[in-house]
Length: 118
Image 1 (cartoon, rainbow, N blue to C red):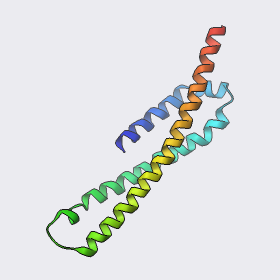
Image 2 (image 1 turned 135 degrees about the vertical axis):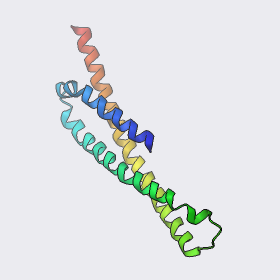
Image 3 (image 1 turned 120 degrees about the vertical axis):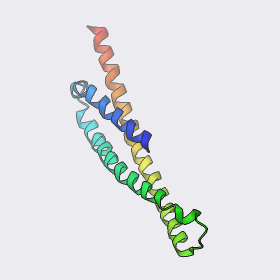
Image 4 (image 1 turned 45 degrees about the vertical axis):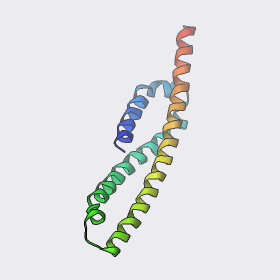
């Protein structure tokens, strides 16, 4: 999750670096919803990260030598819910990331072609 956070910073930087080229290539309307999705992913990651940290802090329930069946069952339920939430997050994030890379790659190719023609 920390890697995804750093990767999102890179993606934001890459989009900023190519903003003028994106606008020139008439792809701004195409990329805007993807950037919005990436921003939502960024916000969601902060919340998800907090949930995971809290869940890790509660791990003591599982490893102590006290038999607390209800609390352990609740912890496992939360764990399963959190695992699903993390999985869903990464599906959405990968989709946005791949779309951004595709668009920026197209923009970079057009930029190179323009340079070669000039």
